[in-house]
Amino acid sequence: MHINPILSKKILAWYDNNKRKLPWRVGKKSPKKLYYRLLSEFMLQQTQVKTVIPYFNNFTKKFKTLKSLSISSEREVLKTWEGLGYYRRARNLLACSKKLVRDHGSRLPYSLEKIKKLPGIGDYTGNALLGLVYNMPTIAVDGNVKRVFSRILNKEENKINFENLIDKNKKNFFKTNRNADFVEALMEFGALVCKPKDPNCLTCCLKKTCKYFKSKNKIRSSKRKMIRKNYNVFCYINKKKQIALTKENKIGFLKNFYLPTIIEDANSFNNRNWKFLKNYQNPISNLKLNINLYYKFAKRIPQSHNWYSLEKNKEFIPSFTKKIFKQISTLFK
DNA sequence: TGTCCACGTCT
DNA sequence: AAGACGTGGAC
Image (cartoon, rainbow, N blue to C red; front, side):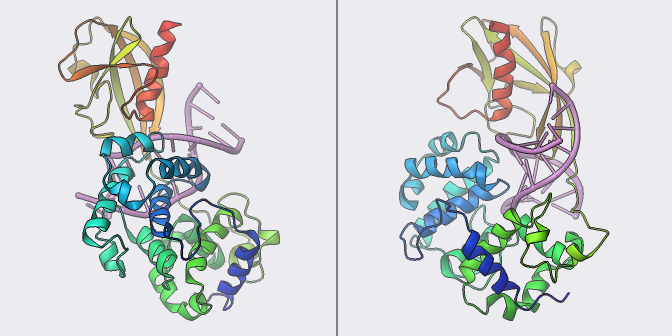
């Protein structure tokens, strides 16, 4: 498990010449630092930089500081998060901001143990924040970093003990004391050079010691396991181009969000008088949903449901539901 | 068009 | 500790 003894110098040199300008990268002493880093790290959980940038800009326009976020409503926050996915992050962020303001004097706790008690902060985000905000000697092990070391060692990701690897290479990784930069540099390097597909091995500053570059049988990272499910979606619609949605679905996913009636077993629902519209696939995280979409024009709808416009809504509507809107809209053309 | 891949936290 | 949780992009 030996690693190039000047890896941190090489990566930092590369970073100095190649880093991107990102809206959350503010000066070391900026009063916005904690808020911007917190927000961006939450958004960057399971979401790529390119996708996050416009959401980050829009979010910071609406919620200017950690304090103003902390006194906002979940409804407002979710509406601003609309379309970014993994909505639990938005709820956790709000809860986290409240806790930081109320219990920690609007400052980040100084240890990983304490920081991980905040909602929505796990190993990755905790280490990232400690490094970025306090320049602590830590490494945030995200998908990029895993891939970089997996390639350098030419060893499968799940066979590497990253805690151990970092501990054994402290002197190498933290000797420059540019710890905040190194946290970002490793991830940036993974995203731009040591990419999942077609890494830039020929121009890479580590090619001399990288075992992946040297080896013939190159290791690939493991795939995500997909779970197939079959769902029947029943939409009440009316002539005003409205669709009935409810928060009371028995289905687990998108809990507490606006959805039409969703039934796993179509036979358990009285589906007479419903018209079949179409079948389509809607992958959600690790689920592979096979959707059968039914509709019915109705005046009366169950009490649990309310009418929503197929166009714009004040409420937060997940993309799963928006896809249904799109299908139903074809009926009015 | 459908299918696969990219991205951490919580229980 | 396996499964739940979203969306966008490439092909």
